[in-house]
Length: 128
Image (cartoon, rainbow, N blue to C red; front, side):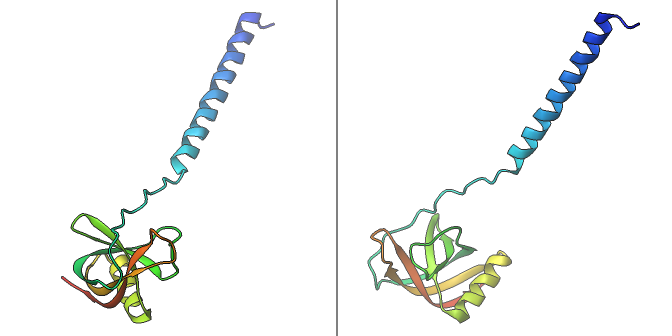
């Protein structure tokens, strides 16, 4: 007949194993949590001002302040929201997927909200 001491030892090992499994499961779930990206800094520029810069482009993460915004453009440490017609959207999407630099021509526009400025792209070229 096993002693009470060995039975307590087995119970403690089971309890320790359960805690280790629970801890590993929690750590695994925490590792899968999505990190929310900080909002891009946006420059406020009067509508109608011309835009002509070279930089990199990414797809816009999240809800834009106007439906035209589909891209973020980074150049010289600042981020600009971009909206583009169909032809330029294809070029910008390709550049975003392939991490290519682009030369953007356009004009600053104002969205419906007071803090919503973006560049309406008139021309986009992939550069070297």
